Every structure is written in structure tokens, then in C-alpha cells.
Amino acid sequence: MNKKPVVAVIGVGAVGIEMLRVLKQRKFPSKEIRVFARSARDIEVDDQKYTVMAISPEVFDGVDIALFAGTEGEKGAAVTYATEAVKRGAIVIDNGADFRMEKDVPLVVPEVNGSDIKKHKGIIANPNCSTIQMVVAIAPIYRRVGIKRVIITTLQASSGAGKSAVEQLNEEVSAICAGRFCSVHVNVEKSMPQQLAYNVFPQIGGFADDGYTTEEWKLVRETHKIMHDDKINISATTIRVPVRTGHSESIYIETEKTISPDEVRKLLATSPGIVVIDDVKKGLYPMPKDVEGRDETFVGRIRRDPFVKNGLWLWVVADNLRKGAATNAIQIAEELIRQN
Image (cartoon, rainbow, N blue to C red; front, side, top):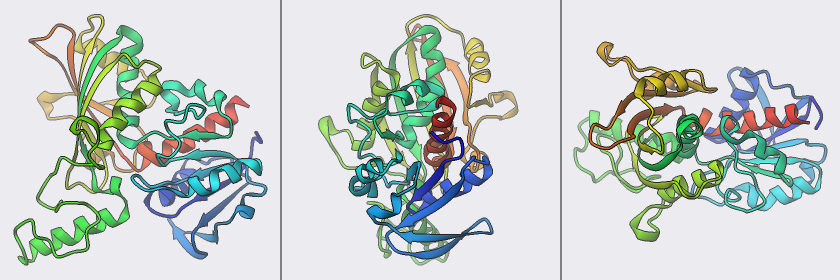
């Protein structure tokens, strides 16, 4: 891997734009950044102009790292172009769901299983946004005392469903504030299956086995793959909430060995990529409005279960467009350079 690679960003939706922003902010050591999408045009991100080229197999000639922005719930451009990009010499980092559970494709969160990058055969997968922040928070505890069980409820922002979902939320809020409606019957073209403004609903993805949604099963299967342990019992409920950006998670864990809340705070405070905000007497705990634009995973409300031995609660918040997508992908690219 060239220490100053040619980088391509594929897709200029919410995640693609954030990838360009993060590349610049982290001063990624690229020789050149190319941008591809379905149609050619010029865009501007934080006062920097980019020329977007129409995607085709030929545009991957000379590309060292291809960052596919991907879209949850849809077949992404990586399905069509990832193999072609690899053939032409690129290493693909895919943010979509298309390759995550493929046997020969590493599913990577650098703070947790960065060494898996070495196993790639041309494609590396970025996990689901809700999975990323959960495993960052629980992995240090798992390594210290083991984890038998995880019960997680996510509160996921509209931007996790893409730009059109944020627009739907904005339109609904505006309509309600203008007094045009006050019920669930929303006269806007919907990106999400239910009204989100002034509402929450417990469905992200389609419904699948045992009444769980596809998003809920992602948390189970992706965590098992990342942690290399399919014996952890994981049960999830995923909820969409009227927040623009920043996923929150209420996580209950049952550990193999005893560890106190104070020990967990100290452990997480010294773990990479984690910021502990946990002073309930002062009303301090992580909130989405405070983490937007940040790359870290924030943890608070660390407390024991008074009725179950080795039971612990965590409250985990992260920017789903950054650590949950763009930043994690670029951290993988940074690791690729370091490891070569």
C-alpha cells in the first residue's frame, strides 16, 4: 500500500459527503481524492469544490483505496463495482451491508478487531452504525471480564436512514408547528414507514426471523463476527426517534466475572475511541446534540443491576454518520497504510 494512496469516494449522499469531510479533517495522507457517483456534477463540501465523475469500471484505474459510501437497506454501488475495483488494484472499504457477512470479508472496527484487516482479499466491510458504537463500548469490558449476555435498545436518528429521512423529519416538524396536522396522517412523500416528528416507532429495516427486524439481527450477527464469539447471547430492539444525527443505545450486559461500575468507568476512560461522561449528580451524560460532529463513542449512566449478579447498564451515544459510518471507514484506511 502506497503511503500516499489515491483515494476514491463512491457516492455523495449523507455518508459520502461526511467521508469527504472526515478525509480533510483528519488530514488523510492521500495523493489524490476522486469522487464518483451515478451522474457527473460539481459539489462543494465545507468550501472545498469537488468534481464528481460518473461511475464506470474504468474510473477505478489507478485507485488504491475505494471508499463506497453505501446505503442501509439498499443494494449499493459496491455490488456492481467492488469486484471490478479490486481487479484494477484497489482495496475496497464498503459501508453498505452487501459484504458484511461474507466469510472472506473482514468486518472491522479498528479499536476492536483492527488486526482482521490483514485477512482481506480486496474487500473490507464497515459494520452497521449501531453495531459499531456498541462494540467499541463493550469490547474493553469483554476483554477484561468476559460477557455472557447483551440486551440492547437503540434510539436511532433519522440521518441513519439517509438524507431523504432527515428531509421527511424536517417537513413533518414544520407542518406540525404550522398547525397543519396533529395526527399520524402525514401528507409528505415518506422515506420512513411511519411519521417520525413528535413520535417514535420500533421498526428499522424489515421484519425477519422470530419477529425481529433486519437491523436487530445485524446487531447480533455483526457483533458475533467482530468479537469472534458467537456464544454471546444478544437480543435487540431498534427504535427510530426524532433526532437529526446521533444514535443512542441503552445496553445491558451480564459479565462472566464481577467488575464494579467504577472499574468500568476507569477502563473505558483509558480505552481508545471512548469518552466517558458520567456524573449524574451534575446531570452529565452523553446526548446526541452534544456528539454531532465528533468521532468518539461516548458512554455514561454506568451502573450495576441490583438484582442480577454481574449485571451492568451502559448508555452509549455516537454520531452515526461519523463513527457509525464515515470515520470508521477512514480509520480502516488509516490502518491499511500503517499495516503495510
